[in-house]
Image (cartoon, rainbow, N blue to C red; front, side, top):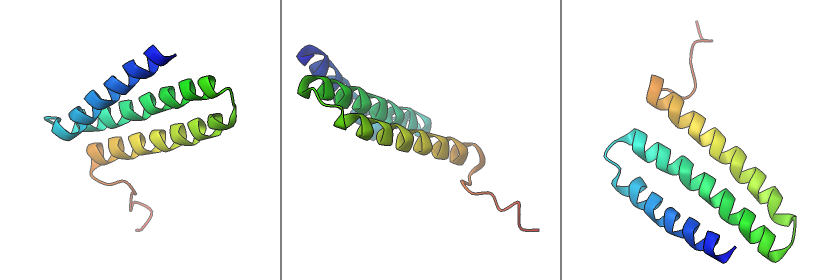
Length: 89
């Protein structure tokens, strides 16, 4: 478990570097999504080490927030708007 935590921690550092230095916006969005997935894995490993199920709720919350953020960024990059004004006519 400790080796897995170290590997995920190193990958988080590299993903933060990609987030800050990414050549395009899409690279930054992908890095942000991968950071969310890595954090979910790291919290899951911590939950196993501590032997408690309390952190499962945090994992679920982080997964939902990461999903909503990724969908919002993808919609913004595709259309330029997150909320459509098409209902106003």
